Image (tube, rainbow, N blue to C red):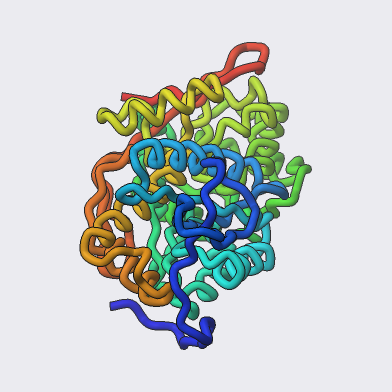
Length: 405
């Protein structure tokens, strides 16, 4: 069992599940409204707390795309046994305060049954305890740092921990170049996930019998990496590993190449987005990134998701969109199962949130990531993983993630 954090009374009176007036199926930032007549359609509100602004928006934009596709897909299939879901978006921006404010708004004003978010592990360590005290389920769509599910009984994630995924990229690099001996590591010291990820990368380097020649630190807000890059290049590494976010990571890749580094580069999960393509352009070419999702994964639901994403964005869906879609699916599937036992519209909101959390942890889900389930502490169980290599057009105008066999 998880360590239960100290509880604080958030809901001072029993309240019924907020039934909202049915409008568009598009996610929005509006608060929920109570229908004025019993013959109106109803919806079930699910909170989405992700970064829509700040430098983290490069990742959050992909998550917004994923949840909006999920909302339409599952409502077209009947929602929760005939009742549509309604996604309520709140912007967390890129810091802890933004995530806390978004969680508080979704819980206390918007009366959501559960929350998908936040974007960063750094934010999760601050915001998830807010939901834990209020006994509101949280599903992390991209929180892969060590210790996230252990935050509390109401915290789970669909994003596999970095300790499982990151080593695959190093193994892929060694397969491409068995002569790798020296490794330089860069990480964003102000980001909890990057610090957690770099520990895994550094351990993997040592476990593979490679020499870690330098560890260079930077900030996610940095744009100039000339000093760190030069220091590393002078040590003649065969492999560079970067743990950061899309904007800083993309700039670091670009500056390493501009300074003459020609070896392999591994990007961590924060670089796992096509939004880095405009940052490093043609110089993104060749970067290796481990993946927890493949657009080519078999199955009807992934085929539908992939088609919807390509139709709208004219490119293959990325991992961040896929995991956000999956987080919404977990809520939908769990709510459908719960509704069969006890009609969710008849449950008081505190009871609904508690029963929903139990159902989430007990379920098995056939998702676009493959079949997943959860351990009793809320850790996702997933079996399929991949490694992709960025392939850019020579002029840097377009790129893609090419999945390695």
